[in-house]
Length: 338
Image 1 (cartoon, rainbow, N blue to C red):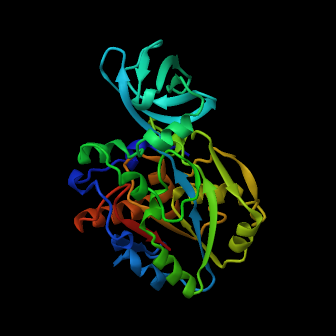
Image 2 (cartoon, rainbow, N blue to C red):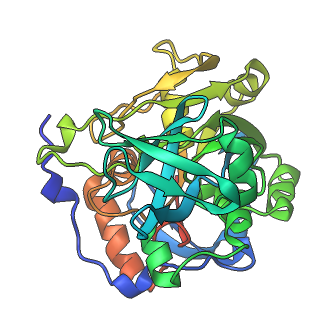
Image 3 (cartoon, rainbow, N blue to C red):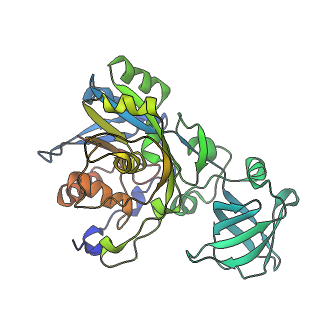
């Protein structure tokens, strides 16, 4: 099945890109879209309990973002900005950056130094640090890995970003980007959903570069996802199996559930790595509802949402959202597809 990437491109008002999150979290807007009719209605995220009830199970991704962005200096005096994406061995990390040269020396606050050892086959820089306890260093000196478009609009980051660019239920550290559909939840909203009889289940998928790596192929079907680590425990799987309708919070939860969904309608458990690329043509086996944000054009999350709702209906809903001045992307508003 050929998927022309141009079919998933669109114009949008750039001023709608949200550089700061809604406060409180559940005051963001919510577009509710019916999969069968294609009809939509406009709500506030705190209205979510109106659409869910007994027999529904929300599935949350409890991954926690770590402070994996560093700002330092090159030996030439220029700025050294890098995003650490994975530890390859103690002290050696793969990182996203630009303008580095093999053998280049980098210095960071607190006496941390590093050397650039070259590029790997995925175009990531290999950076060896002077200490093997890089995670400990990041806890004290790292910055929130906000998307570049937010950093550009904000003019940088501040001390509140790492807390706000995190779900209220985040517990397992390991992501380099937030599962942003979950940013709208508050503890009070989760309690209200439970009071309505909605089940709440949790899994983990550590968001890596694969989730936001751009699609380069003209035929989007040729794109390949990079592996991301997941875990689903048996007790949480039982909650999901017993639900009449599974409502996945975000594309990361969706990819994990669909990876684990067996052909016989069951749900496997355990941990592993998924490279599942959900795009139009995918037959959903586990997920019956989806909460998601408004995504970048030509992105894998957009294709996942298109697979779930249908391309024409989704893009029509996006045009309505633009006309209604919904806020876009990571810190933007949300969509509930049922």
